[in-house]
Structures are given as structure tokens and as C-alpha cells.
Amino acid sequence: MEKSFYFDHAATTALDSRVFEEMVPFFLKSYGNPSSIYSLGKESKYAIDIARMRVASSINCKTNEIYFTSGGTESDNLAIKGIAMANRNYGNHIITSKIEHPAVLNSCKSLEKMGFKVTYLNVDSLGRIDLNELERAITRQTILISIMFANNEIGTIQDIKEIGRIAQKYKVIFHTDTVQAIGNCTINVRDMKIDSLSMSSHKFYGPKGVGVLYIRNGINFVRQNDGGHQEQDKRSGTENTAGIVGTGKAIEIATNELESYNEKLKILSDYYIREVSNRIPNIKINGDLNNKLARKQ
Image 1: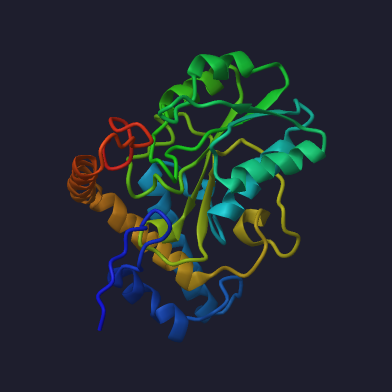
Image 2 (image 1 turned 90 degrees about the horizontal axis):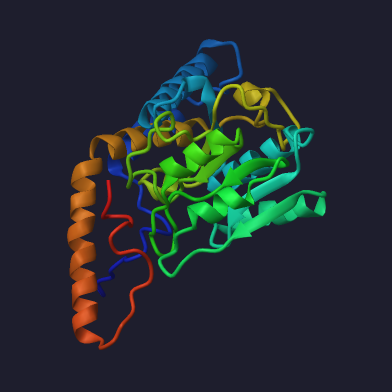
């Protein structure tokens, strides 16, 4: 039998066995609808509440600021479209970068068709935005800035805390796509002045088909799905209880093991870059080698 090697954990990760074990009862035994009033449903509701607490603790926010979705793409869409539509009376200008995930870029393009104006910032050769260019782009009509925490292709980490400071200075809502960063970087939404962020469970050894959206209390956003009153009336649809439970467990493990995990990644990254550089003359490594995933904490 051939042995295979997997080198694409930026695309997806395997489900951690500890996460799977915690999910199993919610497939087979505690399968009640979380919105129901009988005991079987209450078991599911309680489990979701625990998962919400785990996620909130990992990024230092309140539990009622966490919304569960179907993945990072839905979280990005709900944040960007939802915030823009809810705040269009205050302005119609959004700022993002040219190297965002398609979930962000295409959400912005959809908003442009609705009359919103979008500025797409350039990045330098290392994949970083120019903070001065960001500040110059802000106008009285700017209502939202969306810049990803860490790039999903080159791994470059943006100066999120400074972007948050600039956004706060001009009273602009700041959203960041942290799908690639969660589980790899320490993220404190209060300290970094992040108003909203998106994440996807399968990037940190959780299940596929589950995402998380954080939106700070006080920021209004419009629901995108019509239906029931789940997720504080902001995201309709019966909750994926087992997936949400797995997400809570996965982020708890990722938070507790962040230091050792990053040390392992750094060893692998250094080895790979060293060997490729030695074997391929004049190679150019894309991204910021000093400020990237598996490097900076």
C-alpha cells in the first residue's frame, strides 16, 4: 500500500479524535432540536451554550457576541453584507484589500451592485497593506473596513491592532477574516479593537460545515436568511449541534495547545524553507518570512 503525505493544512485539517469523541453523543443520543422545550432539546441547547462560552473565551468576548454559521464563507457574507446594509444610512463606503478571500471580495462586489463604494487597497511585495494608504482612504462615508488577519496563501500577518486603532479613531467598524489565523495566533478582540471576525472550524481540527461570527454588542447587522429565530434572530436554521459542540472543543484545544503547536509548525516551516532554498537556486519565497503564520505570536 502506498504511503501518502498531506501538506495542505491551510486548506483543511483532519478532525481531532478528542473533538470527534465529544461530538458522537449528539449524533446518536442527545439529538434533540435545540429550539424545542422538552429535555432532549434542552440537552442540545445546553451543549451549544457551552460551545459558545468556549469560543468566546478563546477571543475574549461575550457569549452573546458569538453566532454559529455554516462556515467561514457564510460568516464573511453575514458580517460584510449584514453590517453594510444595517449601516447604509451612515455611509456607503467600504475598504478592503486586493488579496482577501473570495468570500470577502465577492461580498464587496455584490454590495457594489447595490450602490456601495468599495476601495481595494494594494499590498506590498510581502503582502502587507500600507497603513497610511488605509487612513487616507477613509472618508466621511466609510462605514466598514475588512482586512484579513493572516493570508491563506502566503501566511503574511497584517498589523491588526493598528488597523483596529485606525478604525476606532475614525469611528469605522472593523471586520477581519481570521479563518487562517484562529488556532495559529493569539487573538484578543478587545485588545486589538476588532469589532467583528469570522472563523471556520475545519481550519483548527474541528468539523467541516461549521463557522463562527463574532460581532461586538452595539453593532447592528441585518440577517441574510429568513426563517426562524435561531442565533439571536440573526441566523435562521436548526443548529448543527454536533458540529457546534465539536467547534467548541476544537477551539478549546487549539487555545490551550497554541504555543506547542506553533513551535512544531515553526520547526517544519524552517526546515522546508531551508531545504527548498538549498536545492533550488535563486528561489523567491512569497510573503513576509518574519511576520507570518508559524512565526509570530
